[in-house]
Length: 192
Image (cartoon, rainbow, N blue to C red; front, top):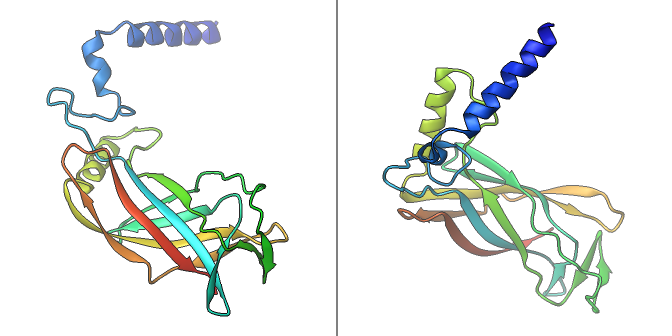
């Protein structure tokens, strides 16, 4: 009997949730705007390209792998985010060769990364968590921030993943008002 009442309560709650006035739809936190009355667009993603390479007798040879994983990025030394690059089809690269632990090529390979920087937790339970949500949104207001690519994982020829640390890779990022994303450009990273 308790199970039936519980299910009925959930069904009624879902019905009420979906039958609410459409004006409330813009208040869902998964939407790109959180302030529906002003139609303010919040900054939510960083786009950049990574080009890891090794040096072979003074010549750059670019790493040829399907993707880069666990790319760790810090913003203002506070916010830390992670992402993987897009999956690339490298089967048709004709000039692949083995150099050390990696497949490499003379062709420049760009690994595109789109990193979501919204600070939306999966579940909000307490008033403090709602306050944290608003504070996190305020962290990426228009302005200039310092970004640092801390590390990323790269596949070796044996199929194992190894972590490459990049403590020197810091750069500015400008967040403009009512812009959803920022393109940070491309970064060549020497693997030693």
